[in-house]
Amino acid sequence: MEFKRVVVTGLGALTPIGNTVPEYWNSLINGVSGAAFIKSFDVEKFKTKFACEVKGFDAEGFLGRKEARKLDPFVQYALFSTEEAVKDAGVDFDKLDTSRIGVIWGSGIGGLKTFLDEVVNFAKGDGTPKFNPFFIPKMIADIAPGHISIKYGLRGPNFTTVSACASSNNSLIDAFNYLRLGKANMFITGGSEAIINEAGIGGFNAMHALSTRNDDPTTASRPFDLDRDGFVAGEGAGTIILEELEHALKRGAKIYAEMVGGGMSADAYHMTAPHPDGLGASLVMKAALEDAGLQPSDIDYVNVHGTSTPIGDPQEVKAITDAFGDHIYNINISSTKSMTGHLLGAAGAVEAIASILALQHGIVPPTINHFTDDPAFDPKINFTFNTAQKREINIVQSNGFGFGGHNASVIFKKYQQ
Amino acid sequence: MSDIASRVKAIIVEKLGVDESEVTPEASFTNDLGADSLDTVELIMEFEKEFNVAIPDDQAETIGTVGQAVAYLEKNVKA
Image 1 (cartoon, each protein chain N blue to C red):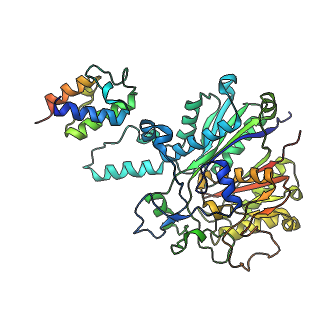
Image 2: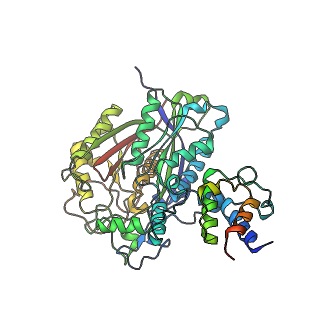
Image 3: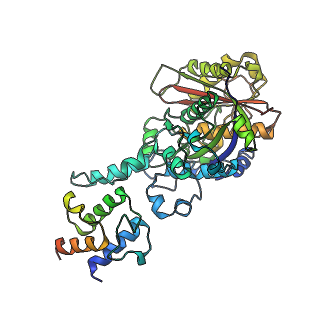
């Protein structure tokens, strides 16, 4: 059976460094940090007092007060970035077979804020279970694609992928596979996350996962720097419209890139720590290359997981070294989390968008906040430190690794007829 | 308008996002004010909280309009 080809025809982004795709890209190539002191709750007693929050997002203005109240922020974000992507794709759903258009969405956690508020409310009471009827449908991680389908009337496959920080790479890969197999014509895919609240920051702090550089938040996310001390929590959403090539051509769609491969693996090692030799990470990059029918030497740029944690970054470099061999010296590597922070279940989506735009513009967004080389890393590796670099990019790979040992990696290529 | 009626109205305006002028005694939560089944449950809970009463499920089922809510509460809320 011959696979169908799959292309990217629409993008939408709501990120800590830009609320639209053009704003996001502009910040990416200019090395803008999205980190600042947290505004959404009182951080006084928290070890980490900063994060990469979405800025100037007006949920009530966008959705109306009644609708906004019924949606957790992770769903509000999903609807916002999806509206941009649908417009960008120039798609008129009334003219298409909506039973063959689906939504596959990634979220690592779902409605954590809703869960927190409802449980706190219960705990304050006398034990009488007075839960809001919207508690469960606001919180569940699958409700985002549900709402997207309701808004646009899309009756194709619809579900959420949950694999922590690999979630939206998994959503991309699932959508890609259904399209390749001819099971659908188009997917709205991507992911969203909204965990910057007391439970999210407190929970990740308890794991010692977050940077505590409270004296200098904008330089806290410093992947591959000697003094990196943890990730910086981010939030937001990224939407990618994937479409079967013939379907896209028939409606005269603008084509950003072709999705050519996806790989998945597991570390099978520890709940949260990555495999020290990068075994799962190496496997996943090789699996994606094999899926795409490519050689390591075909890759020009790797948008890495690179979260700025002491143990995560080295294992990924080991994995890339293992997967790419000497070609590692020819590629650009960068972690855009240095600017956006870590969007967890939305990371794969916003990083895929960064990768696709890098292809399109021939510019590699930088790994900002590099001050001191870590002797653990080969100095001949090009981490694209501090400033964006121009280069011809034909093929780009983007990695995502999640707690639980989930790994997923995606590959995009310049579209050619 | 009684104190109870005006407080009921305020809750409905807030929760259903409707204009005050739409909240007439005859207005049905579901047919006129755009409430779905979850909205209706939430409204009942808000009335319970606001007026410090417990509305049993079998009674809640008989409250379908603004007027029915006001009448029920006027009868059951201790002044």
